[in-house]
Image (cartoon, rainbow, N blue to C red; front, side):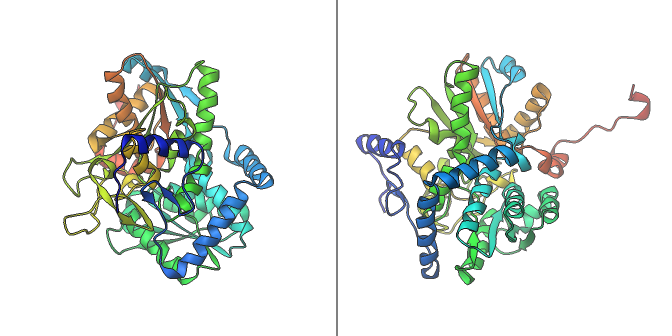
Length: 420
């Protein structure tokens, strides 16, 4: 399969993407995307695609979703001027506060929209996967809101490092199934969720959490998450009187990044920076830097850029952040890199941890470890581009990461005599 894109092709594809002509009828973003699925799921995916295009263009459905986003999720989320980071970095830094959305991350935008869609389609139950747990929590909350039972698959490794979110899912009524196969992280959870969906494609709705997977999921998730970038565009014009010079977001599967980037792709003055998990370093298996180090291939129903070894086997990955620990990326991101509209870099575990601590000290905000990668990338970019306007997608709050943070950042013990 050819994935090379020349300059003229890139310009044409970008124009089609901005004009909502991509994905095409085959679910492709130029050379990427598509629908590579087991035969038993093809009718379910075709039915889903039909309903996605029906309901996302239905004024009544979208008005109801908008009312729920405002009244229950708490949208629009604020765009906060980060005065402390601005002074430190020599830039005008703004934070898009998805950490303040209901359940604590951007995931609720997608989960609520898909839960409402599942109800319209008559689903008897919802299946979901989760890595960092934020999508699982969001799905559990959204399903409780619309009255559909849900089951969440989560890798056993992630269950250990994201214990607070597991407890929240149980409290919200979800059934959480530990996945002990494969790498026991997000990839294994998606594998298991797909297997379960194959067993009951008619009665179950698979609520996929990121902009990955077979068509129509990448398009569906982008549409539901684009509320982020749409709000940022309006808020920047209101607050700063101009658009940002650059928008920065972390990239695992890529849902929060595509939600921030997509609505501003037509604005030629705006640059975009996606920050992947650099983990321990550049070695295969030491990171989750798919776009930085990967090659095209098929995973979870889509042709995109992946991490695999010389034998074509999907590579186990590493990131200190559970939500970025995935060997693939959404097909729209693969296209945006191929045509040069978005730049993608990496941030190591240590760099993300230092950026997290800096945000805590300068802003009184504890970001998720996923979001901390975006802060690390933005900090490096600001050093090379002083005086610019930077919007960072603060995709989630860091409460869920306390078990991990306590292992990597020792908490000082204050003696009783020193408390004063």
